[in-house]
Length: 140
Ligand code: GDP
Ligand code: MG
Image 1 (cartoon, rainbow, N blue to C red):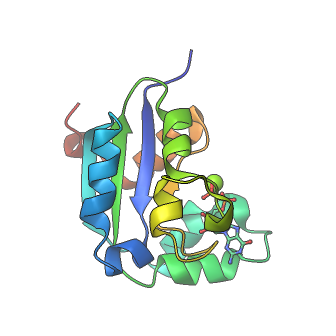
Image 2: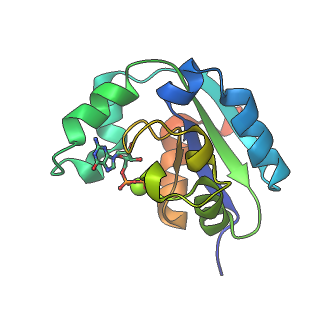
């Protein structure tokens, strides 16, 4: 059975552009409940840790620099079938390939500065949520 939690970040490009509120509105209107949320900022080292699975990819260094370039919002979200439904809501990694009406289609600036993160599996959703949030910081 699919899990009911996922993890998201509103990335520096969307935060800086003042799109956090509009993105959170889309997320809530799609039926996701907020379990934990904070505005924060990654160092390049922390971004490197978060994206460690991509360390052999050519864009890794740029990605770590970009993700630590400004504030972000991190959140744990709850909904039935959360991981898959959230990936649908945000759209393809490259906004040029993202479906109409998806968050990335509407707000992303490029394949790198693509407005939001969404976990790709239940296992990674748990790991990523634990990366940012202690039990005390969660509503449930
Ligand atoms: P996601 O799961 O859709 O976020 O995509 P990936 O896990 O494949 O990549 C992680 C993040 O790295 C993406 O969300 C982008 O911010 C960035 N990224 C992915 N592919 C590229 C690329 O080809 N070039 C650059 N510069 N960044 C990329
Ligand atoms: Mg990914």
